[in-house]
Length: 306
Image (cartoon, rainbow, N blue to C red; front, side, top):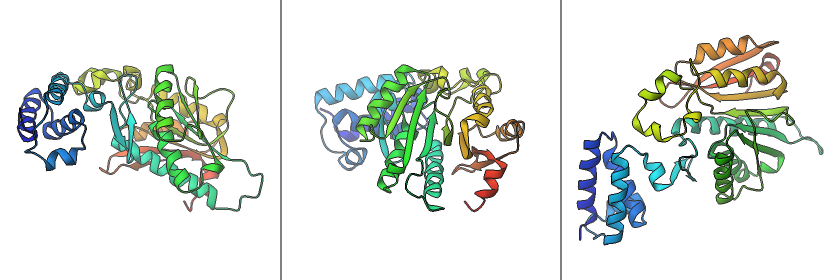
């Protein structure tokens, strides 16, 4: 019977040899999952023995990871914005950089709710998450707003073109106790009967088609539909931008995640919309241009203090 420390050393060596750039972390997460313990517990108890069933589960997980399958799919869970989301091959795995979109959405909603008096009968702030996938963005936002006692003044909708993705997103909403607060709908981008929205959130596919096959092997396990953004990566993003004049309320805003080199093209697309529009690109924590803020110029002037 092997100890935790022995299995970690063996697993780390094998995963490193298979090309993992985070071999030790992968091994710790997979062993913790196999024995039913947190990663920190695994690290703290390296001399503990691992039962044969757990060792066999760990071995099977190593084989899958050696083949390139993402740890999140093997474990069936991914941490995002301090929350655990169920994930599988129906959906894109939530990325850390997308947490910026959630944080900015929370800030925007809070500003809308507190910047001016809201007399009785004032409509809810309407938010939509386009291409929701696992539901991580909509669910994390709803959870944050509930903690701040703001959710009762907000309507959150999450849409996706994939029924399979929506099924998983609904499961995640139930798991995080916001199923009563997030409405899910199947639609190609925006539902035709729902606009206008005060806040449109989107993490759409933005990888150029020619680059998909050169991504790390882990990406080959994810739905291509959630990655492939067409020839320049902005095919779907441009479609959403073109819908903004009708989909956004007069003082509304869109927050759209983009590739680090796509800022100028997105700014140009926003500038070409009917009327006057403002677009600025916010960097993520690593300093890479990541989040496009798009709103009407008049709304930008009214909200310049944000």
